[in-house]
Image (cartoon, rainbow, N blue to C red):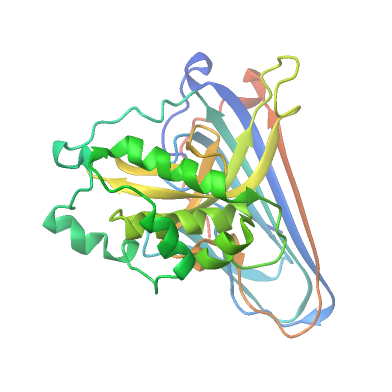
Length: 320
């Protein structure tokens, strides 16, 4: 067993300033039933630096024990672990444990550059090249073209326009759990009028790009907390893998938009990878020899007391 523990980005603040402290646990296993050769496996399960949650601790465990693991950053700056194996394996396991603190976040707490306060707008010339990957347009699907044609491009406040687009996708696409791998095309999602969170997020990314915004796909965790009020939703604290879109606005940076809820992202959105394409943001990618595999995922969130969380403010260097 090999455990990789990250450094902490800042010293732990006093408990009353850090908000609700949580422990997230995520375990994924692939049982092949017989020895199987695996290609290098790419793991994207470490919190991205632009998230609002305060990361107190992080550990990644990979089994079987006979493996090599190296951390690097991809072109978008996401933390990526590359795992290699010395021979065939019958079972592959990935487990993460994250200690973090959540505090309420105002999603509108930013200042836009005056030049982009109203939409439509043009990005300044120096940014156009830097944002090129997030503005690339695929062939326009007829269903997406119909949707775009119905959107008014009259001048309006930029933030209001973004919020309206997130609500538009939320109203047009019914959420459903879709265990099949991959992401639907925008045309498929609009035709079926349903999709997973990643399908809605990818549709919103396309819509944003065609309307002039630089946009990217984000995979991460969604933490939803029960407020302790009768009838509150969810009935218990929950943790799930999730996906959303982000649009870049000069002066504010990347602004998260959740097409599943129709809202801007909040403190419960924990980004893991933000990329130009969904394929580069998948939690675990890699190939294996042909054959079947039993796939299982377990996730949990636990509220921590002050004593259990204290003393975690020491800085650590990443291991390999």
